[in-house]
Length: 318
Image (tube, rainbow, N blue to C red; front, side, top):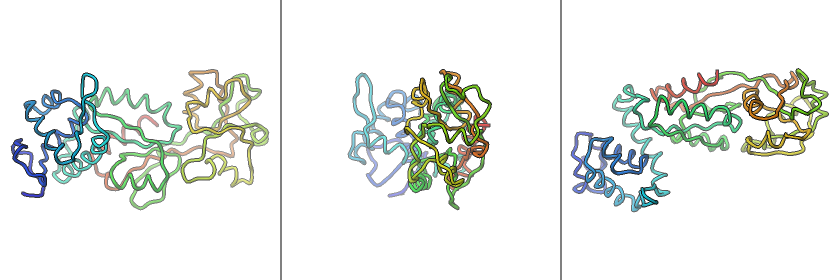
């Protein structure tokens, strides 16, 4: 079938194929090659000879005009073009499997998928290590790729292009093409040095909160203020911010020995309180709880893989 996608039963004689033809089996071999960066391991995984895998690599090099894998030390490393192809090949194979009804056979124990999650920065410290450990146990061949939160417009484009599997955020975008749910709600708390004058208090009143000096996260893409300051503005209030940052991992170091406070979700605060001299105090009740949203594109809603990933992340958050 010239110019189309051939079935997996076609031969692996890649040297006889034209530039305009694609073979599904060869796409799967390419996916493994780009993931493993090894001809021998790819051959073993697919039950092929190393020369057959080398021919496949040669064919895709000719098609793309790029070496795709280059020598690096004692092994091979993907080129920037190869890294760009990973998402494209994943998406093509996902669509083919969905069309052929093969996704019902999804098995995390053998799947070589790349898991792509966009998450608000505050989820990183307490969620990502647990997620990686769990995936290493139940899905040892998968690769987790955590992506920073872009603007909502850019995020929408990534979801529609199939370049992101799942999104974790404290706010949910309005779009008819997205599915989502509120997974849980987290208490809003204040982090501070253990030597802070309010460190032993059960909670902070709004009057005391406004008298304090604050460390704040930089506003998310496309926003002029952080969610905390946006909420205060709705109440006609404003706090005194003395420093802001984009890297949440620096928060406990900035707070150490200072009189600044950082307002965040309880799971994030508890994570660092267990590792450093940080006290956690309930924020003013006017803030209420922080919702945690999980959302994905409509095209992935019936995906066996995506449903499995949603359950996995949901169980870690609840």
